[in-house]
Image (cartoon, rainbow, N blue to C red; front, side, top):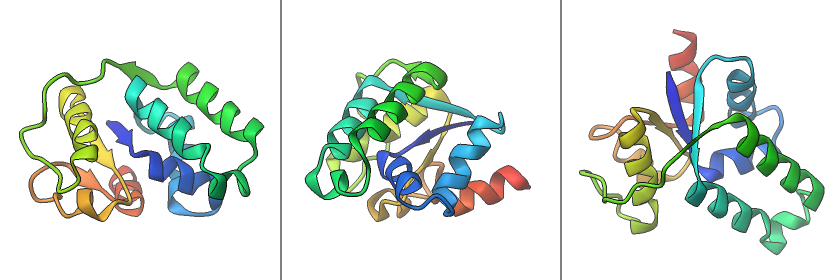
Length: 135
């Protein structure tokens, strides 16, 4: 199984080491699924980790380490050139849908704009994706 994790899932994992997003990253480390990232996703994550609000809770070294870990361990896919067949109410999320679609991967997010598309695209909350992995 392959998955694209929205940057909000990775950030949530860093903020709450006992939550579903952190358990999901551990499942990936243990080889339970393949993690797909793209340069755009990594850039979005890097930008979000630089927000002053997050800098107070996630140290610069930890943010840098996570980005290097993802770049060195995840599958880096090409950023999609075309928009996805199904669009998000938030156009900024369309690249995630397209990335997951192009890579034959599930999209895992905590974003309600994306989760409301669950009937049209394979998008899951972190907890629901963990359940899927365990089934």
